[in-house]
Image (cartoon, rainbow, N blue to C red; front, side):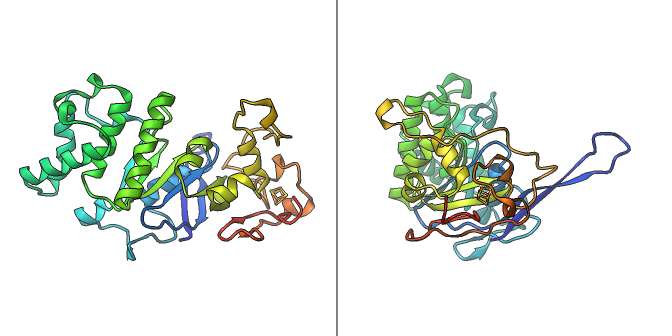
Length: 314
Ligand code: SF4
C-alpha cells in the first residue's frame, strides 16, 4: 500500500549535488491466493523496483507490505523471508557456475536447518512441480539448457514453500516454445498450489496468457489496472492502448486502426508535470500538463481503474 522508492544519484559533475529520483510513487496492489498479477510497462517504468520491494530486497521509503495479513518487513525470520521469493531473468547469474545444481537447490534449505531427508523430499517435489527430473541435480548450470536452468531456478524458489513468487522477466531470454512450457508450468503452480504470482514483463502476450489481473505502470505510477480481459479488450488509458497496439498482429483482417507510441519515456530526473504521459499523448488537453489524474473506476467494469482526465471521452 502506497509504496514509494526514491534513489539518490550523483550529479553529472563532481561539484554538483546528488539528485533525488522517485522511481516508484505511491503504488498500491493486492494479490489473492492463487492469483497471477502482471505488472507491465516500458523500461524505466519502475516495475522491477516494485518487484524488489515486494520481495523484501529493497526497503520502501514509504508505504507498507502485508503478506497473509502480517507486515512483511525486516528484521525477517528465515521462514518469514521465504514467504516471498524473487526469480530473475538471468538464470546463469542466479547459479554459481562451479557448483552442481543439486547443491545449490539444497543450500537455502540447509541455511534454514532442514534435515537431509526433508530436503531431498522438498527438492524432488519442487522439481516435479516444474516438470524436471532429478537427473540434472549432478550437472553444472552450463551443462543444462536455458529452459531447464530457468525451471531449476523456479524449483529452488518453490522448495522454500513460498506464498508468493515475484518473477522479473522470467521467460524473456528463452525460445518461444520453451517460454510456453515455463509459462504453462507457472499457471499450473498458481492453480494447483494456490501460489500467488507477480509476473513482471514487457511482453503483453505472455501476461495476457498467464495473468488474471494486470497493472500498467508509467514513470513510477500505475496508470491502469484491472482484470486482464477488461484491460486488454477495452483499454481505457491511451498509454495502455498504445502498448497493446504495439503487439504484432499476423492477419491483416485482424488489424485495426492502431495508436502509436511516439518518442521515448521521459527521464525520471525531470518528470513531466501533471499527467506524466502528456508529452506523448495524442489526447492531451491543457489540464493534462498541470494536474495529475488519480486512478478512478472505468464505467461498467468492476475492478477496472485508469488514471486519465479524459476517461469518459477517449
Ligand atoms: Fe492523455 Fe491527458 Fe489522459 Fe494523460 S490525462 S493520458 S495526457 S488525455
